[in-house]
Image (tube, rainbow, N blue to C red):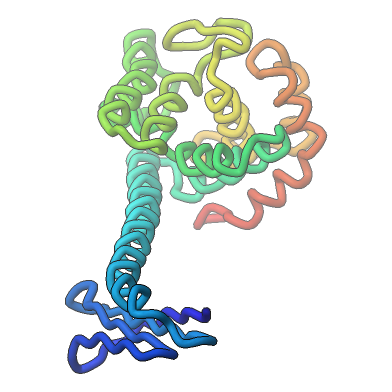
Length: 272
């Protein structure tokens, strides 16, 4: 039995059943229709003829549900990236930064041997790490000099703000984004914030984001600093291995540093 699926737009609905072929046209929505065509090697029985309309209607329903699910996921991914870019722009970072850290996290996750699905969710949730900065006043975000103690206390609330916002969405990517937001400033030795979580108690996704964020920030030119040299970034990672960073992840970054820098080169900041 040969089945062909054709997206088309016949002038009128139709069902045609013959001994050697079957055609069923169904309208999906205002813009699309589906025509299923089955060609049979041998004549079919009356029982099969009776079942075919039910089978093809269910086939199209399943097909449309799967397509709708994929479209929703793609829209969700694009909206999360756009929102993350908007937050970075507000804090005088760049949209390229959120894309780069997402790709760096994806690269490291693959090196860790995580499943394809896990890697994909990490990639699309990583850009939301600083979503909580939406709750930080611009006078603090844009302050040219060092923050005082009170200002720094406000800045340190952004992981929890992001977590609170994203936790309200019961979907895989925002839920992972909530975890990344809450944990990306935690440190391996427990000296990070907001909860002082340490070691493997820090979610893996947060540990990935912690080092990806630092690597990209140090490698970028900003109004308040020049880009660091590659050897200086590597030296800092080595120095902070087991302190700020997960030792195993730090080793992966050091061992594959040139490849990570190549990822960064593909998506430079607009002014570089």
